[in-house]
Length: 207
Image 1 (cartoon, rainbow, N blue to C red):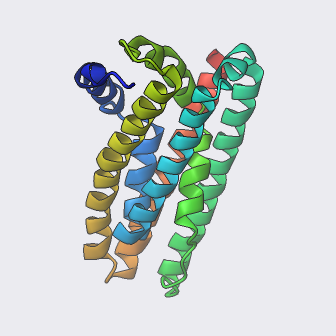
Image 2: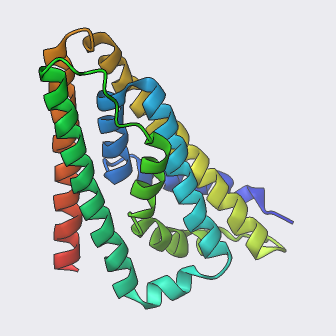
């Protein structure tokens, strides 16, 4: 049996966690600017998938293994930083194509990108490990309770960050009529990817 009485307090904690700008939020902003609303929709589904994987890992008990081996988490974060730099390079190429009159060339694969970016942020699994046990309440089935809490977290992030991506995608729709504007949007997205990669790298060095 699931204890639903803890849900309001849990939702409040999730909102406090999601409200400050983070990698997923910044990524969705960049995706909307670079690819538009349709790309943002696909990307947020990818991010939701990545978060669901981490939530399932915690429910299955694999999260404790990850927490006890921080080197594994650092390796994942290094991969994430490298991947974001690759995205920055790819986006910069798109900006140059737009300037040269070939702005119709798309990089695509937004869903897969979202999955990889989400999985490259292993702090999510640490959050699940720290927070989910605090909201077990009087649940008779701890695994089911954690699964429900994890699903709520994923749904909230998809709604919140997906909305941000769709909103930034509206700017893409308005400005893509001009090749210069398209290039500017791509360069902004490129900058966001680079900043995210630098932030992740600094966090690894300071850990």
